[in-house]
Image (cartoon, rainbow, N blue to C red; front, side):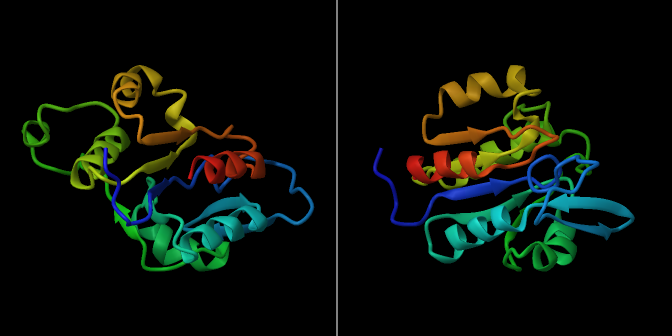
Length: 172
């Protein structure tokens, strides 16, 4: 496969990735309330993601149930760039939409990731989502056939770690 000069796409989830489901607030972490939800994140992790994006090593795109609210409400407070591409849920689409996606059904984020890969066949993809482990039955076949896709599944209660970011940077 001949890869384009465009940077790899980094599909980024919020809950369980940036927002760790923590009761305690580790030293240096931040907490904020957005749309009535309390989010907890490590600003050193979001700073590294921002640097990867701004240096041109990756192009961050939102793939989260927060959809456009990730850009509108979360990006600046978390230290991430604004104006990123956002992938929305397709479940608001009319009946028969799965037919337009080649008969796909199941986890909406998998459908969105597949659409990104099809639209950008010469770009590598990093997909970070805590639900990837839970959705393994749905994602396994596609991922096995897509070696240009790196998946990272942070622990919901820990969030994305520097060790995982190190793995991503090594893969890049």
